[in-house]
Image (cartoon, rainbow, N blue to C red; front, side):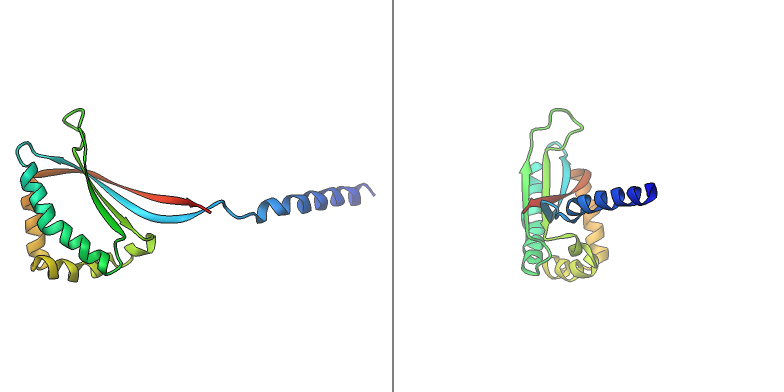
Length: 146
């Protein structure tokens, strides 16, 4: 009898806990944002902004047309010490799946916009080192309340 009562208590407890387990999360996974922190070399701000306007921006615009990128922004910041970024490049992607096959998706866009193959683009990337230092990147994902 005692054993039956123990099983009955366990069963009642599980039945009471079941609605808690079945509840949905109050949010859903949202867009993914990559934030690149950039320290512009002294005296190179206008040169770097010209590069962004002439090359980076058109690549981002084509990426938006292709549905890879949702939006992009450039933010200026006031660095409080020499190790902090003074520019942030922020790119929003619709979801994590957008990163699958990213190289294959972006190479044709880069070639179309820059008219460079991947070796030439890599060499040009190295030349930007005189204008800026990439301090790092951070990936964040929005959690959208339902």
